[in-house]
Length: 260
Image (cartoon, rainbow, N blue to C red):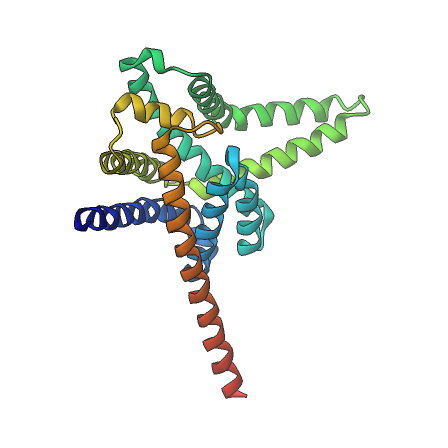
């Protein structure tokens, strides 16, 4: 019994460290937006909880809405979530590639898709400035088509999005990637501990299967247990963070009223 309690406490602390890394990674992206840290923690906890409950990572849509409201700018809110997801996926691919070299039979459609997605995204991001400049000049010089203005408007929208993302990650590429990689390594370690507690097999191949099954609804016993554990702990964190924000706001309002 004591061993189980100690194991549970270790898992909770380990889980807290993992999400502290992920939280600070997201905060690093939005560092210049001046978001109050208490509100940021509450936003992170409730959006992470939504992501754990809603399948296929569709909770990211809710996260975009929350951070758009928090930053009071839809462009920054959406771009920040995209940046966070991209670097998380980049670290995932960097881990998956050597795992699939060791376990070629574990290669799945999901891992191939993620690898291609990262490669294409990096390629597009690198060539976008020169491509935008060329297309912009070309369309301005050949405006005979009725769709020229519509294309120009879409180019400006894409350019604005590119600038949002570039500003959000400028000078922080390496640190964000390192934090993403660290979070995945720590999560792999936590799964090893949980597997030991519940008595199931765990190795690099199992971790590879865990990663590639994230976007599916069919989960192993280890992943099901880990998901339920994550939901329970994150639900408690969300309630605590929410009460902290409410108490802070209440204290602030009382202080403001006393000055009147």
